Image 1 (cartoon, rainbow, N blue to C red):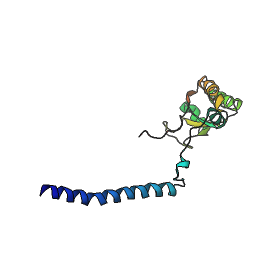
Image 2: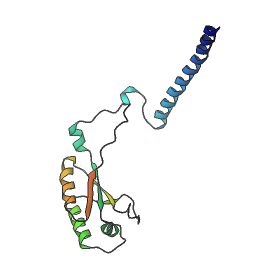
Image 3: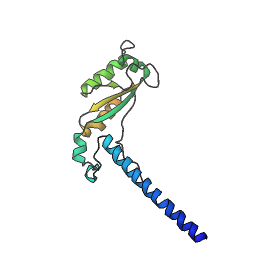
Image 4: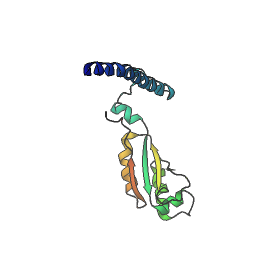
Length: 149
């Protein structure tokens, strides 16, 4: 009696398992299609070479003092520190853009980004920015990586 019951339970769950797998496959396929991605194996992203990485613009995040952030966002009159930062940024050929435009929150207002067209010069640019008294941090956010299985 016990063997018959086990066999019948196994037979009952097998179609459900297959149906579940089919549904997961369809959901994954539809998700890729809806996101505008190709679901074929040829659409798998390929690691870029060093030469290709050098050609891509990089985004540098810069955290400045709150006083300078208020000046850069037009909320306060210019100061010596803000003028020095603006001069250095112009010399480097960059443009600082606020991450949170118009933010008055002291935790959000100090963050700016600058697009650096030459990935080779990123380290030099960050070093130049970090020498300024008004710059509290400058860094490149590492590229996103797929989650580990």
